[in-house]
Amino acid sequence: MFLLGGQKSSIIIAPWLMAVRTLKVTVVGAGGGIGQPLSLLIRRCPGIDELALHDLSDMKGIAADLSHVSQSGKVIAFTGDEELEPALTRADVVVVAAGMPRLPGMQRDHLMAANGCVAVKVATAVSKASPKALLAFITNPINMIVPTAAEVLKVHGTYDPRRLFGITTLDVVRSKKFIGDSMNISPDEVNIPVIGGHAGITILPLISQCQPGFKGGPKEVQELTHRIQEAGTEVVNAKAGRGSATLSMAYAGAHFVGSLLRGIGGQEGVIECAFVASELTDPPFFASPLELGKDGIKRYIPLPQMSDSEKEALEKLLPILRKNAEEGIQFAKNYL
Ligand code: LMR
Image 1 (tube, rainbow, N blue to C red):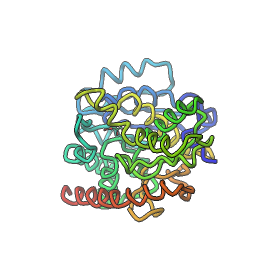
Image 2 (cartoon, protein in one colour; image 1 turned 60 degrees about the vertical axis):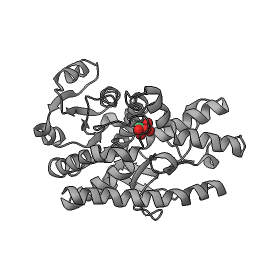
Image 3 (tube, protein in one colour; image 1 turned 90 degrees about the vertical axis):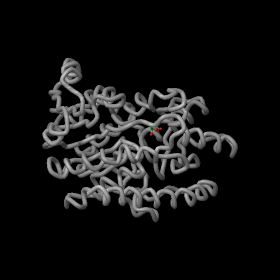
């Protein structure tokens, strides 16, 4: 059985990491609405010797604040483009939350013009400063940002598909919460693979594979699927022009970083869904359950069984992901 995001205490306790070498994590975009809570939650991951916080505005205050949390390791501030490479130097994990959020009425794709350059800039700097780092993007549109970053890394000769991730953990987190609530059980008890991408109908929760088995009929499955696919928009609309999900995204991002660190530390059986280079389906990038290890992706888990309606939904999303990948790659080519 998959344990997708199922390790309840991932952000809090991991005694296995105590014996492992110390690690450096860099948060790019650490001063923003996601970056600040993300950095706070990452501070609770054991084994981090250095947490580097980078943003375009002055990070000294936030770093000083976070450095008072009673956890071991240091917190260091890096500010501005000129300090991006120093922030990344020797990083084991780089997580990128920088970029503009959606406003009501926007699709995630609309952010590419504003955020594509974040992927180019960070991937270029990672190529120079920490080419062996595991690089994980939160920045939207994930379906295009990851192909853009891959292309930039390729141009710099540092591309390793096992080390590049689009974080789709929030889709799993939401699925666990909504399904848990609907089944009247704790979200922690729910395990479900979410495959595809991270926008609208490209988000495909495989409710037929939910553990424990989902009891509702086709109408409930359809309603839950739609709610999970549109959950980001639900938050964008509720925030009414003041951005998109920040706290739940930080929770999900910190969980994923915790899993990357557990993989680096040699823990066996760390499984997470993420949007990565993939040969499981036709588009070159696809989200699916992965086993994580010391070099990032250790194993692609074969696609689970699907119901007929899930197979149909998969067929519909594949052309979208293919087009998104082409657009992301083209963005990098135009930019470089
Ligand atoms: C989310 O799923 O909440 C994020 O991708 C932000 C957004 O724009 O919806």
